[in-house]
Amino acid sequence: MSFITWMRHVVRVLWRYRDLVRIPVSKKIKVRFMGATPGFARTLLNPLILILVYLAGFTHVFRAVLPDFTLFLVTGIVHWTLFGNVVVQASELRVPDAPLIKKIRFP
Image (cartoon, rainbow, N blue to C red; front, side):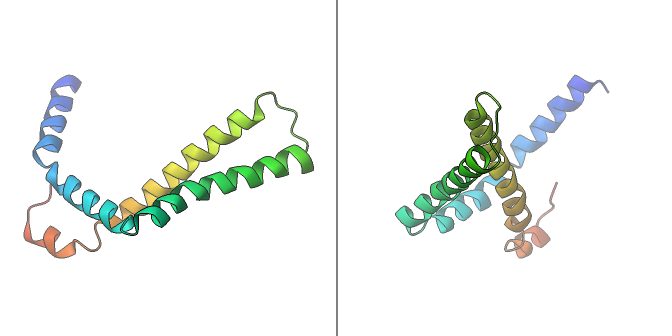
C-alpha cells in the first residue's frame, strides 16, 4: 500500500467518524463560553497580560537587544498558549464521554 493510498484511507475514516469529534467539541465550546462575555474576555486577556509582563521584563529588566523582539515574543506566546490549551483540553475532552465511548466501536 503506497503512502498516498494510505492517506486517502485515513482521511476517509476520519471523515466517517467526524461526529465523534464535532459533537463533544461543540458541547465543550458552548459550556466554556456559557457566560459569553466574561469567558471570552478571559480567554483573550490571559495571553495579553502574559505578553505585557514578558515584554516589560525582557525589554526593561534583561535588556533584550534582538530586533523585532516584540514580534518574536507575541508569536511565540500565542503559539505556545494555543499548543498548551489544545493539549490540556484534548486530554480532558473524552473523560465526561466515557459511557459513550464504551457503547460504540471507537476507531
